[in-house]
Length: 442
Image 1 (tube, rainbow, N blue to C red):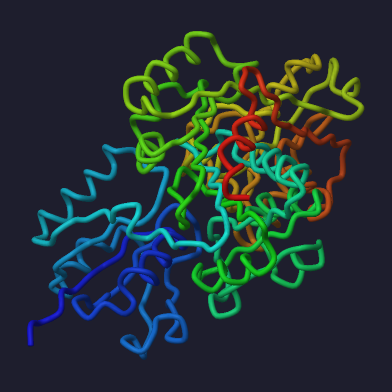
Image 2 (cartoon, one colour):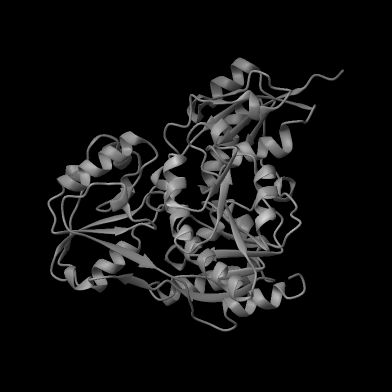
């Protein structure tokens, strides 16, 4: 009998587990020796548990820090390394490919369709070419459209299993109590809370075969709400991809965002109300060249702040979405735009006040600058975030995250929330496209 190929899966606690579940778990050709973990803190030094790993892995599969990859290849005589996470520069992917091949192993990325599960219900996927392009408000808008068509949408969210994996196999969220029961991180709440506020049921977890079956039992239409710039886990009937003209050209520079672009049925160039015309035009040109079959829509991302007059003339601390600032590499987001729009006198630099894990985040991502990323993958990070905000010498805190952080943090100074939505800026509208493309299957 031929000896099995020894495999390491490079991941970030989500796509890697899905690739294992649907491609490697029961495949007799392969022996998965380990996962490596990147991007997200505190997800290494864990075990992919035997209850999820299947009969071929009775002891489970260990998870190591990504920087251990060369030694893991050597010590275990690895044959194949499989790259399985998202929103990483093409150049960085090839650095890891070079490290792998220099150690004598093959390097692979799986074809997108290999890991897409087929649903018995219509699927709309909402994906992007980078983190922070505006998937959240687009997903909300699509849910609104589906409801107005007389159908029930259920959202399935890209995985964020940062806790006990055995307790996160299938997660269903329909209320704030579910967040507490599931001990959700800030990052998880950011992706679920805005949909729960809309009355939409959200599923997430680890095993997306089981998740899909449960979602299908409740849904007329399944909405895949993608994470980072990852490709969908389900075969979409309509694949919608978001583009950010503030980062024009990034659609060609990051994995697997370019894959999403090339597969797009509908390409939405978002944020045209705040981006430069040159940026919008550059994205259009790239779409026409590299995704000529995609239908191009233009959209705005309007910003709302209750009591916005409290910003005028004030020294403002801006708290932005964590992943958008960190591996999403955004130089600014909705909070900065709102501060400028409503007349803030100054943006206060939080870095001199940063404590503990927040200071470490600035050290790891120095491009963040004078914004405060709302990172909260652990209780320690949440604690340090709260202490840092309260230590900053400012007049007003401006929260530009998708959730009400004051439900989680005890803030000792005036605070306002920035909300953002989806607004059509061209015809046909998003509603026109969804109705036209789904009319024969709904």
